[in-house]
Image (cartoon, rainbow, N blue to C red; front, top):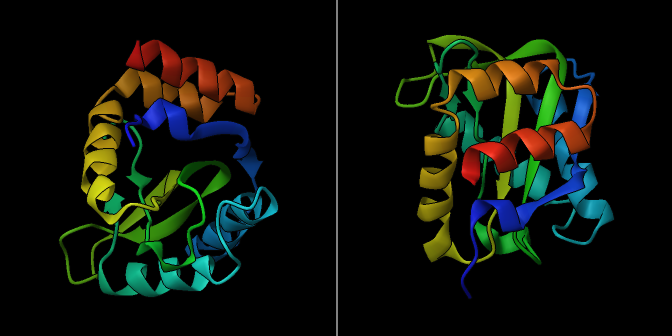
Length: 157
C-alpha cells in the first residue's frame, strides 16, 4: 500500500493546546485520540513510552525542538500520525544520546505505522518536514487542528 505522511494526518488526531504534565502524559493523550478512531489499541501508549525510554526521539530542530515517539506495530490497527502542540513544553531526551541530553519539546509527532517497512520512510518524510523553521514556528502558534493541517499541506505541496 502506497501512502505518504499527509495521508496519515487527520484533524481529530491533532491536539492543539495540549496540556500535558510530562512527555509520558503527552504520549498518553495523543494515543487516546488514535484509540478513539480505532487506529491503535490502548496498549500502544505503553509500547511507545517503553521504546522512548530506550531510544529517545527528541530532536533539537530550530527554532523549536520536536519529538517523534513511535513503537512497533503490535498495537497498531491502521497507520496514523498524531500531532500535539503543547501549551507548555515537556522534556524529551535527545535522539542518539544516552538520555542525559534533555530537550524542551513543544511539538510532538506520534507515529503509529502498521507496516514495519514503512516506518523508516515515514520518519524520513517527517524529518524533511520539520527542517522548515517557519513551519515549526507556525505550528507553535496554530489556533486549531485545521490550521496545523493547512500549514503542513503548504510545506508538503
